[in-house]
Image 1: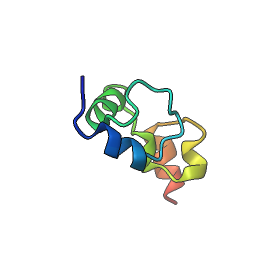
Image 2: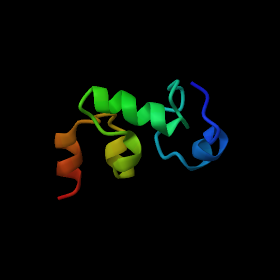
Image 3: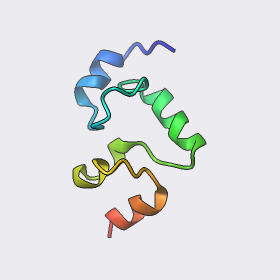
Length: 64
């Protein structure tokens, strides 16, 4: 799926998994992680995002 905002999104994306096929394609990224009951990396603090644990549990722990 092409994303008209891909270039802009890629410049602002905080996900460190840059080789992901969904990198910069927010719609596809959110749909992918939602299907897995996860959250996209951009919602996590940088030190937690780097663990690649996208679970809701990890997100809640990182907000405490």
